[in-house]
Image 1 (cartoon, rainbow, N blue to C red):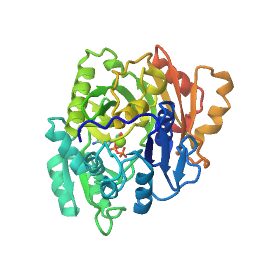
Image 2: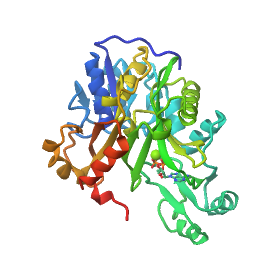
Image 3: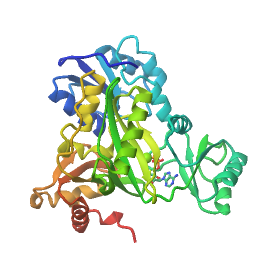
Length: 387
Ligand SMILES: Nc1ncnc2c1ncn2[C@@H]1O[C@H](COP(=O)(O)OP(=O)(O)O)[C@@H](O)[C@H]1O
Ligand SMILES: [Mg+2]
């Protein structure tokens, strides 16, 4: 892809997927004067509540994707499991500045890790694994502990199995999706990281800008808290900030990135950084940018796909972001009246479910670690407490 075509306000952006990421993209796009159409099977989905129109159909409905393309000037997506062939099939009638290579690479852990390593960037050691014999051979090479991951379709820890000892190898043959027809997978060495982090990079196909490195705390494989910036990266000239920025810019130019790309990182105890995985879209760990940065990850995404220039994002204040899952909706609402410092986001999802991302709260603060402790002390997130 080369530079995205410059589109003017009044043009229509079509988004495949209408969840919270699509909603926040749509909100920014509306501020900028664009029209927004959404493809999502759920009536009145979060993005449709703020967009101009919705096509109610499944994401992989090729007729619906064609309809979305016909009614839009540019197409984007809010998640990576979109049918790349279906997008290619409409590329003659609509702009798709992100292209489909980025999508194909990030949909497949083998392609993704190959791409990252090819750009001289470290990952956990990994091997493709397609049956139990491959698995034994890979364990012999990589050692234990290790993580088995399906090559495609995983999210929030789904499609993963941690192997700690030899007995776990045989257990794999009994659990889905490896029992019976063995799901194509990779085995990754288990990284003894100091903590997890991420960095966002946005581009318009020829110019790329990065965001601060943030620290991410997961519970049950779901993002819980983001601390912005990560303490060791608060100084932009720190080794961590520089290493992350450097790898982000290398990946962005490797993809000729248009839009926002999130890069999940492992920060090792010796300070080195490895890339865990890529998400070719705005990311939960970047929600803090809405209040804390001079341009947020959604506006950067929209600018990138409509070919606008990108200002260098500035962190206006350190921040902490905490997710509001289904079980946190009632306890956090009960405290809204007493927390003027909470920037409360609710995605407007009709159905409240346990572990479902319903919203998030961002707090601007000079001491994000202390604020994170204050949030925890409210008790709203006690179900996630580790013993
Ligand atoms: N190789 C690894 N070593 C240690 N922890 C890992 C490894 N791979 C994944 N994890 C843990 O599992 C989480 C989810 O894995 P990830 O590959 O990011 O999949 P998902 O697509 O589900 O986000 C990571 O955020 C990290 O906490
Ligand atoms: Mg992940």
